[in-house]
Image: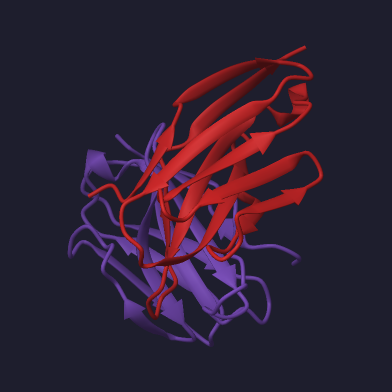
Amino acid sequence: GAGVSQSPSNKVTEKGKDVELRCDPISGHTALYWYRQSLGQGLEFLIYFQGNSAPDKSGLPSDRFSAERTGGSVSTLTIQRTQQEDSAVYLCASSLQSLSNQPQHFGDGTRLSIL
Amino acid sequence: QQQVKQSPQSLIVQKGGISIINCAYENTAFDYFPWYQQFPGKGPALLIAIRPDVSEKKEGRFTISFNKSAKQFSLHIMDSQPGDSATYFCAARRMDSSYKLIFGSGTRLLVRP
């Protein structure tokens, strides 16, 4: 597709369940980012991938959060044993390279609601 | 630790007026300052961006003013239109290996017809 694609667009789950969020970046984009947007707040960085490796995981809030990227393309963000404070919109962005003058393009996000 | 502070939180402007949103950053380890526009249910879309060696950049009705010494930058929307009603985020990109973006808290703009 032409843009960053995220699925599902909405996810409602019970506290304690595991969830997987998927991101398909723009074809050819080697850099991939996950951000979290809580209600009425700005975006908070979670993790950065360059190719399949994640050199910056500094934003992951706890060890319940993990992410992987395969084939230099699709990425999955997994949240284990979800808590109510995990409720937010999870946004994925990609860029051609993590270098100057390469803007980050965002998907429309996954809205996660923990009951 | 909030490294990018954005104001105001919300803004109401009449059609045809000028919308001004301000941001300030707290350290100098940033090399690129984009503004994003976000409509409800959508992801942020890049609007305009500036590098710190430039004091002003204009694209159509949108202008970024940058003051490196004051560590401040602002977005001006000239001739504001109802279609500009959205949430605007300023951001600063870290000069490290990840080039991650640090975002302000956002400004909800409403342009009245």
